[in-house]
Image 1 (cartoon, rainbow, N blue to C red):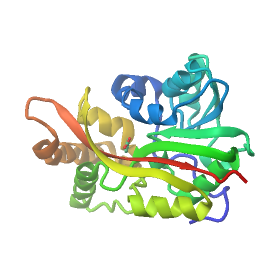
Image 2: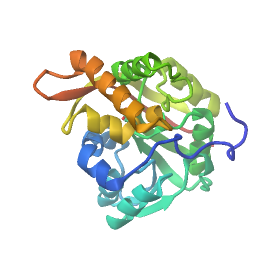
Image 3: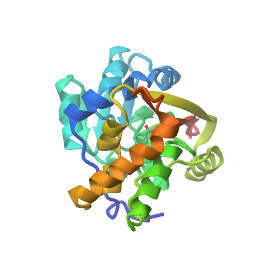
Length: 262
Ligand code: BEZ
């Protein structure tokens, strides 16, 4: 774990966020955020921070309830897409949240697994919340996209390339994340892992292009192509129905926690 906020890369090396690509291949992400949105139970007049807001689809939904919502994301591209929806969206990375006891709730969907120093992120979330404020989040938990990770790592290794510094995601167990929350000063209200195999409307190659570019970072195009082909071939046995329909082996960690009132 890091002691300082400054030495955290705001985005995983090699990860590109393209709002058009996201809209074409990943619009299921906010669409499947309905359960964690319901869990937030935003109230009119509440001030809510949407951490890792992406293109602002859920930020907009929270605002429609009548809450005063601020979306933050490390990607300039995604913030531009969120601003185009008319929401209050700001380019700020999670390690540098400038907020101090301002929010009734911090919400996050499908973002926290990109942040490899979770203790620092939780400390920033804590500081952003008013006393008694709540934290409601869903992200990749232990076992998330395990087949995809294994196929990527095996395909890289087959070409003699180590995946050690390429794996860009944090997928904690329930015990690990609950412990972290308590260490930072939260009281955990609910925390669970939920297996959620997820249909990929535009297939696995597009999912890998949209989300897994750190695994391919710096590779020559021909090597990238063979690693990609090998990965798809390995995955076709478990994540494709053989008729071109792909799914991803998602496992969500869904959590609600709150700060003491004083
Ligand atoms: C997820 O939402 O679980 C996820 C998305 C992209 C990459 C890895 C995990």
